[in-house]
Structures are given as C-alpha cells and as structure tokens.
Length: 373
Image (cartoon, rainbow, N blue to C red; front, side, top):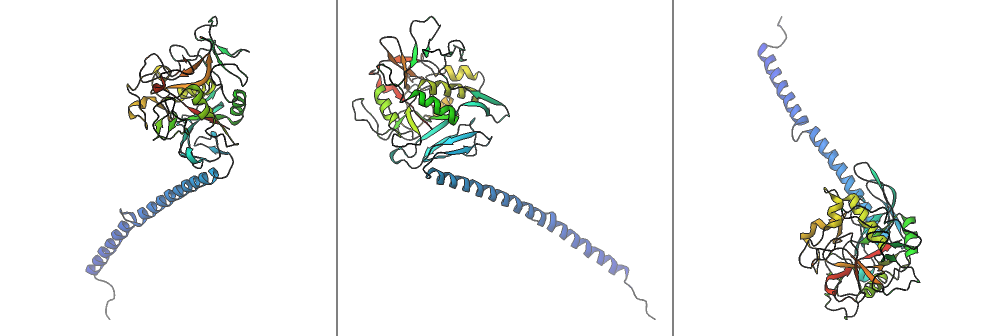
C-alpha cells in the first residue's frame, strides 16, 4: 500500500506560492494604484465633482435669477443675507461679506459688466472668526486717529455735523428733496435710509465711476456711467453732472434705485471697511492713508494701490477726490468731496473737503455711484 500525502518540498513550494499571491493581493489592495486607494480616489473625485456641479448649478441659478425681473436674496458662506438686484449676479458666491460680496450687471445694456460691493447694515453681521459686529447707517465724524468721534457723530434735529466741535460756526448737512442748496442733493435721502434699513444694506461702486471713452473736458457731452474695471475714469465732471449720471444710471428700473454717493453711504462704508480691515492699526491706516499713487490712474485698476483695496472696494483713499451729495455751509454752501487724491496729502478717506459745484480741478475729481433696493 502506497503512502498518500505531499512531500516537504511540495509543501514549501505551496507556501511560497501562497505568500506570493498574498503579497500580490496586498499590493493590489493597498498599493499606490491599489483597489483601496483607487476607491478612495474615486470617492474624492466624486465628492469634488459633486461640489463643482453644485457650484455650476448655483452660478446657473444666479444667472437665471438675474433674468427673473425681480430682486432676490443670497446667503453668503457665513449665513449673512445679501439682497441682489434684478439683473445682477454674485460673482464670488463662495466668499462672505467680510471678503466683500461683489455683484455684476449682466443684462442692463450699456452698464452691463458694472460691479458693486455690498455694504451690510444692521446687527449680528457674521465674521469668519466666529464673532459678529453691528453697522449703523449714519453720517460720522472721525478723529485724527481714524476712530469715530461719538459726540460729534450724534445727529440732532437739524441733521448738522460739525467738523471739530459742537461750537463750530460751519456745518455739514445732507439735504432733503426740498433743500435749497447750490449743489444737487440726493434723489431722496429719506427713501434711501428707509430702504437700506429694511433690506439690510446697500451697494457702493467697486471702483470710482467709469466711462467707455476717455473724457477731456467738463464741457463734453455726458455719457453713460459704468463701474467696469477696464473702462476710463469718469473725471472732468462737475457735481451736478456727477449727480445726473449717477441718478440716471438705472433710472428705468423700478426694482432698485441708483444715485450719487451720499454722506450716509460713504461714512457707513468706511466704518464697515475698518471693521473688516485685518491690518495692524487698521483705523489709522484706512482712515488716514492718502496719495498712495503719485499719478492718476485714468484706465483700469492701479496695481500699485493695493493698500487701497479693502473688501473688494478700490480707491476710496486715493486716485481721485469724489463728489457727494453732502453740503458744507461755508461760502454760501459748497459741495463736500471725499477720499484722497493722487496729488494732495492733505485729503484722506474719512476727511471732508469742500469745493464749489463748478470746481475747476476736474481732472482730479470723480465720483462713485450707489444702488439700493
């Protein structure tokens, strides 16, 4: 009778083969191109594709909403509510109000491509560090260190602000519709204040006013104002001309209003920008910085003035002085200009200048439109 079984050599060979197969299996499972890594990679790619698809859908919905004929509500990445005007889309939906939510005109003819930045107003505005802050819609007087002068910023019945003390003879005022002033007042300042409080914010031009063709004189025919990044600066313009084109920018639209920037809009924007400026000594820097460029930037954006870009808003501290609808009582009422110019270190973001409505330094003065819902 023969013995049945395997020899020692056969057993060793079998074990070696099994070990080789196990090694191959392990490599196939865990190697760089193994099944487990490929499955993990496939999962990550699926999640990334899903995220991209959601972004595409969100942007597509934004485009659809911009054509919907009505204002909509957008929620930023922190949960802050942003009102978006009819015909506009949010171009940075993954950001938040602290970054500067930018909307772009996508349907309105000659103004298509114009960009504005949301200025939130109200309580409990959320920041990325988990804190919140409040923004009051007001006109403010700022101290030399850039902080708000609480005493002089208290508006009484007369709506008059003094520059240095309550005993100052001259004052600044934001005129009502029936005000008798030499400069053009806001379209309806009470309507502006009421709607901003209800909607929780307003929009300010991302850039100083722009125009398609370079302007050479204030006597040239007025053209359509834009806020496009690559257009020419809209200078050689009087306060009355700035108010006219700013107020008529979207005059045909009944869902929102355009106007020349007023004192409430300028000051509230500055307070908001100070809150979101992450530089050291931010109040002093943003409020007092000026003449960041020594020559005027007449077209596009000036990359040398990056210190004057906060929350996606450019040039409130430099480049051109900017007309507003505020009035200064001195010299029989003169127009208040804001911001810093390229050629004068005396003016800065929070400061108030005073110029005649037909001021002759047209080359270095522009303006900034606003819109509100």
